[in-house]
Length: 152
Image 1 (cartoon, one colour):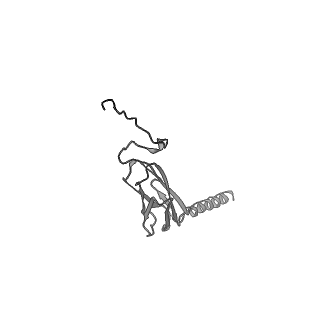
Image 2 (image 1 turned 90 degrees about the vertical axis):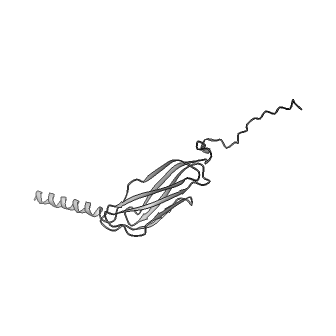
Image 3 (image 1 turned 45 degrees about the vertical axis):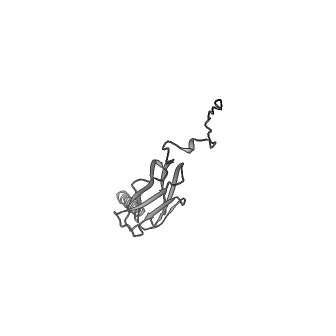
């Protein structure tokens, strides 16, 4: 009797474990990409590779960036179990000379329904790669000049 009870309990737990893992599963190679230092105007684009590690087809219904300076592109085709897909994310560095940390929200039929991936980096001035306005006080610096009026 004890043996039968233990076997039924083990069978029940293994069935629950398998049902919890069924359906589509969205698994990324990495969830955050750091561009490091970029010059203003540089191309900032990365591909987030993901895999459907579940047992049913995965469909991305929406991929939305946190602001207009970040643009995601993705395939609308279902990703079958064991196959990979990609989300390409572009960041516009033009006129944005400061550090950035942007989120992209991925909505799919996987559990959980939404997942966030991130890009970050620091855009410096095009003429001066070491320039970083995050370190400036915002007050323009004045350079003293010397004028010799004695020779007039």
